[in-house]
Image 1 (cartoon, rainbow, N blue to C red):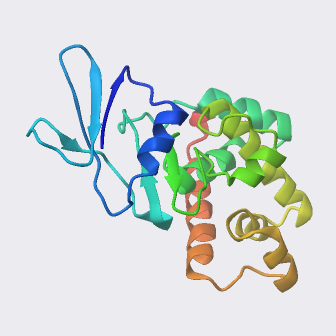
Image 2: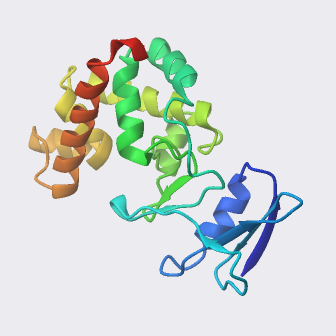
Length: 202
């Protein structure tokens, strides 16, 4: 499979094509003299370089600009955090744990974008384009606020529900003993404590 794409922004339609490739097959790219980005899973030229990926939660990452500034979405984070009355440092911590600020992140389970929204959740949160950073952050923050409300502000339970689903957490009344969920809750909390020590960021 070969795909040519002009420009730095990878569209959702292109992402869908790339994500449809077998997850075992590596993807490669190079940018030619005209700025056209060429993608392939069968490189025939040494100019092709592997596209960065991530093994976290089985994620498959496709991006034309992997060296993204972690502060690139601060304005959108502030706007959504203010709208839903959540500490923006918490929202940023969730984004860091979910996608490491890659707005084109897609997991094998189908979670999409910065805050890794499942299509059903994105629909419920009125997200039109999960790969649009502002739209995704707004929907993800709205969902995080919903989880905090469901669990009376208990951060650990809200984060567990964000990761494993609210029904399971509500039934157990605690963080499910799944390694992924336990690690996720711990990771977000560690990032949150880190950001709270850097008040100048906000």
